[in-house]
Length: 222
Image 1 (cartoon, rainbow, N blue to C red):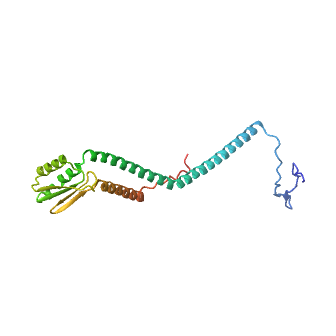
Image 2 (cartoon, rainbow, N blue to C red):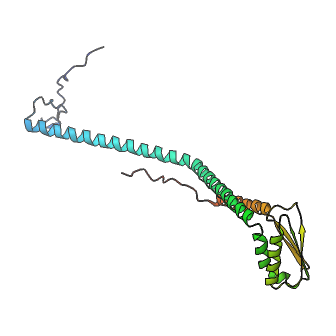
Image 3 (cartoon, rainbow, N blue to C red):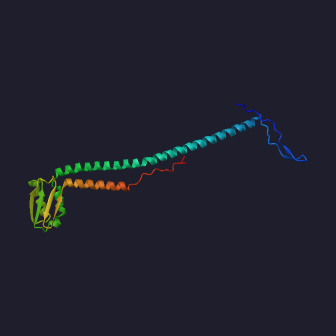
């Protein structure tokens, strides 16, 4: 390999016209080999400023790339976050439903005639003119029957109250039959309907839930 010369050979490239006037001055400029202290300080300050600007530009570029990568990661994680949020809603709803069912079951075990009394109070005007009311229950004792009969009397029902025992009916469930209609209550079926309604509401919410959108305008922020 041929070593490059440390200096450029002198080339006389100044051009003159016929009268001796310089037409094109020489492009040769001798390298400056000595600097005054003030010139050295100025060159050092300039070099530091250029180095600082380059470092800041590089840091800004790295920051921009990092923020872009974060935004891409957030965008990729949104579907998973939405699924996790929906699963949390469903699990919380199922837990609340299970707790409500335990509380309701305990209340029905303690007051099995409660739903029947509420139904008679609600249907008082409809059964008032009926000559006969048939009440089918599964576990209503004599005291309960006497209480229901008094309730019918207090509500103004003047017909005959006939009790029919049906062992197939769950506890606290009943069936009412009168001349113009009938009504029934099944605790287990009621729990199933509540669960179905809750799951339908959750499914509808999942279809119209607000999407978790990451803020992709992170680039350029300090």
